[in-house]
Image 1: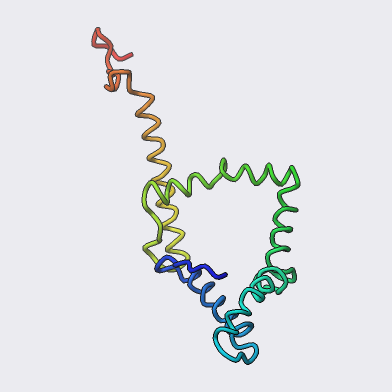
Image 2 (image 1 turned 90 degrees about the vertical axis):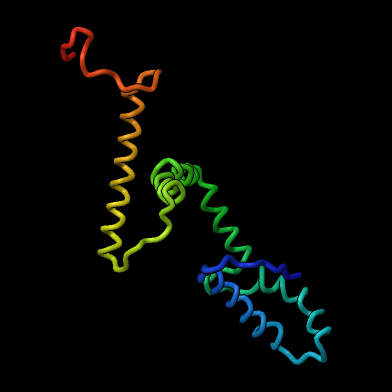
Length: 160
């Protein structure tokens, strides 16, 4: 049967997917043929869902079939050991930085509009991210166990 899932507010892509699903249901199941009443239409729904999920071609997936071909394509991609290792490296390359910027600093949207302005804003965000990392690293390196930075002068008053 169909499960009711609520979409998050202000997510146009998700709302578009839900609207597209409803439009497809109306076109291919609800109004595809004349039913005697709503009960008859509801009896046809369990027969239509496997067609929608497994047999019907979906335009977003290209020439393949819906669920089965998408799952087969993904499995074929991950079956290759080399590709699996490349996929596993994603967490060690750039994505943690994006996650830190997004979650840790709360920067989820750009404030400016236009590609040039967004590029400038992104460069500023990444520069401050790198400066914060350097600051934290240097602060950890310069502090001793008491939490105080080391003195710049030796006990005799001379520079080291």
